[in-house]
Length: 289
Image 1: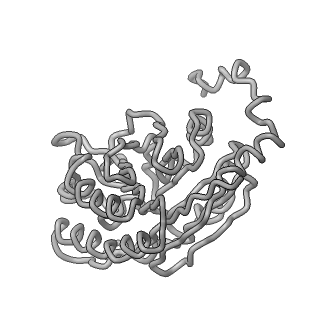
Image 2: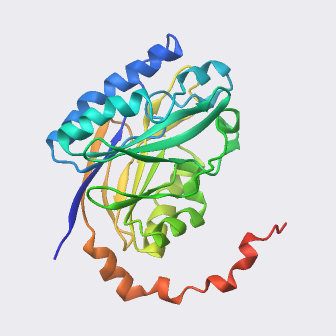
């Protein structure tokens, strides 16, 4: 028997490139509302937004003014989006710049269930600081909540944020904790990462017998113009097959029907979890050179 869950990504470009950080933030939130409504009307059950969906990818520079866009989680955005979650019975994944308290900021994703209830959050674990334009250690403290799994109205889901996808342990822990669908909200530009975009996560889906949804923003963001965000948001099944993929340059709602019964079918065939030998992998946790 099939167990279908309709999932979607919103990939979107930044609509406002000048003004105060607060004005830019508000413009991006407003731009999302019509597409959130569209997702609800199309029957989407789990909707994932892109990394720090409420603004540009400001990590292209190091400027304390962007700290002003951080907020409490739960807080104003989760309260606002909970109304849409309730209206459409739609689980929502909201990547937000989080302020725990003044001077301590995280890159997090909040989860709102289909009844509008706040279920919790995941904080980005691995924080990059690389040239050009990924100066994230200036803005984010490394996550301290581990890799939680959320039992939503439709499926058990896990989250790993952008750079976390390069660390295979992230997906493995979530799968071992029972997650059926993993979501990776991202902000990544054309260049060396684009080749990996459709390589790493299909392989991870196979290795762990899960569905993965990878989400990326689109467009060239001013004034930095350090790279073009190439969209291409997709869903991949436990066999590693990309089910649907968005364009590389358009705002888009990317929808896929995920049959969760496929997970058992694939795992019964491969038996990777039966044959793994965790007692042999202790060296991974040692401080090797």
